[in-house]
Length: 240
Image (cartoon, rainbow, N blue to C red; front, top):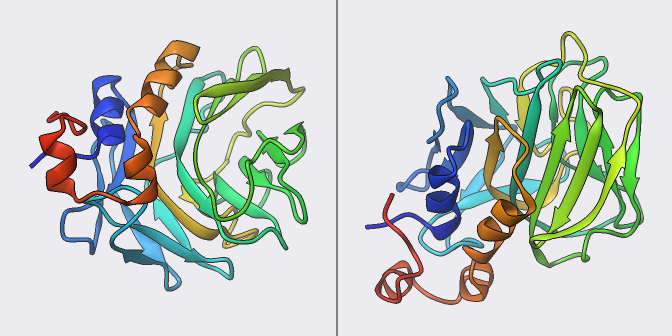
């Protein structure tokens, strides 16, 4: 049995850290090269069927649910690409796609309260934003953000299309904490909705590579409309 297309494509591009639901839909697996796996915290659960057929995804309640990892990608002077699939249920509060666990200066990427504006904070102090860039609530979105900590340049992609490269004046802090999916700090600004899979690349991917990742997610997979076997038989899942 193959893996969902996004997971296979991310592996082919050598994701440094690739967090995906395990087959049993009861655990999470790191398929990348970074050490450590992850655990669901504070009542976060895996649900199936999910946004991608054949794999569960995390249901986060917007209260304190999150996914805690043992990996910290927030290295001073590094280059990174963060990406994944997400579905936002409501916009009444801030929703964090990912962040650092540190209580002070934790990096984060979140959507604004009462709006659909993406905010990137490399250190909880210096802000870069993309106004109204998130497509809306109850919509499955493939998002990606590249960050060069040396040049302090960020670029956001929504469904494979760039919505702008922007400069920031900050960089990663010395003690950012480990990566969390769906929250920052202990459980601040928790995600309300679904996420997974989630990948971190140890480089800035090109626009073409990000488009490839997006194209690997078919409309049927996003909608959860076809069983895994059907997708496999139509060559929409590639064995790693």
